[in-house]
Length: 454
Image 1 (cartoon, rainbow, N blue to C red):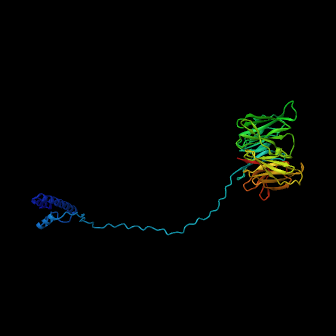
Image 2 (cartoon, rainbow, N blue to C red):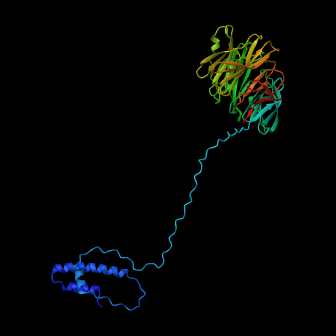
Image 3 (cartoon, rainbow, N blue to C red):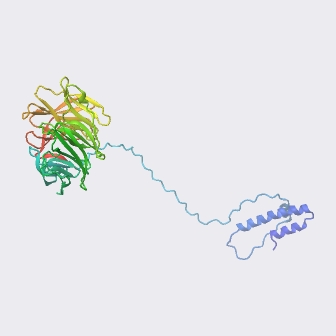
């Protein structure tokens, strides 16, 4: 059997010239490509396994093949198709979400502020300002814990309540767990005759106190004051300064600066009974060096003006308020910025129609925006007391509490504008009260609030 390949070879051998042979090579290549495509497209059939004879091409067909121009062979198509068309996967319907209305944000209620737990410390003070028991009360749960603390001059710093055994005796501190520490390192003699003045630093790590005595063989009008400082945890003490002051005055500590590096001191008249403490010649004492620096006193240069009198120190130790009086001008508040020495004079509206006037118990608000103080009218033993508030930014003043027999003192400013008051000797009775912004006075406790434990 002759194939298409054998016929090609025969045609190729009959070519006589070179050009004819080259043409025949091109045509032969085309024949080979077509043959490969034809055979690759043939698949198995159901015919009998005997080989069918190939058809013999006619001479005209061969001649047509020899003269045909080479063309690009078409892509072969398979001769056998699948008997079944596999089912095509129908696209699943994409669920569409029905458009909904745009949700509107509903206003929510403003959450009620969470009141933080505080522990208030009360003492069962008597009219002479002595007490026997300190009580810690949680202001949320109302749980109470009482510890014996017999003494006077109570104050709260951190977790501790500090107090004296007596006005001439040493200092203790006690906490809610009943731990009681006596400051024997102060070395106060049992026969000490002067009142013991002392202050605690804001962080509760230091104490400064005064000891006064007359120098032997020196005039009775000459007093010597010594100021000591001690580290409470170790009991290590150090003499800060020693001052000899004439005219019956002693050097008295008043309070620490917020960082504990300075102590504010003043000269206090000795042996003179007064309703309000008298403060004269203020100074700043450096705790590290013991250097004493007097503060400027604008009232000392004004004629007919009292230079010694009540005063108040702001919580941050930056401002000093002094209460003065000038015969031609009346009562005034002098507000001094301690860093610059600049003083602002604020006239007051205190009436003198109710007799003798005295002022004291000044307290700054925590933000230093206002000053509240007490005014006493009348003679000793028959006074009436009023509370006044000064807006330190505008200089305006208003009466918070009209004159009445009880001497109240501010111990705490509340966030709602109310004031917590306690009764101070020589007022009537004892206890703690709330003065509401509308002037209503509410009795809170028979005991006296002395501070908030941290």
